[in-house]
Image (cartoon, rainbow, N blue to C red; front, side):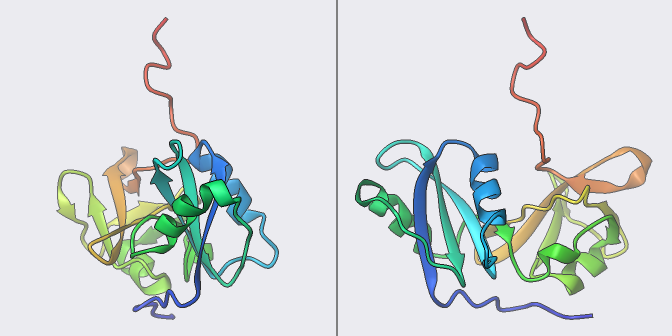
Length: 165
């Protein structure tokens, strides 16, 4: 097993293409060829609310009016990780110990309950989007049927009030 600690953010590029939704930014990131070695999304307000991107291993152009958002995305260690070392290995069901040893994720937490135990099983649902918090890459999970944990963020979230007429 490979251990991924101290992920390098050398040569981080900030990009802002005006994506209005996380899924659109994710799609753009995952379609890059060559693929970035690391990529995060960032919710920004300048010059309008949208999703900016920080990545390494790839360069991309940003329109001048979106440069401030791109610069904000590249500054500091924050964001929602889409591509990170070991992310491609986080498929199926894995123990928390496996998640930590196979990827750059530093900690797995259970929403409202604290750090998950090493033996807890995470059904990744093949969609893992940890977030940087205090310099650590943290995967937030929630309990699910069958005694497993699942990532709190899902691939296709239910919009707020979706079942209200």
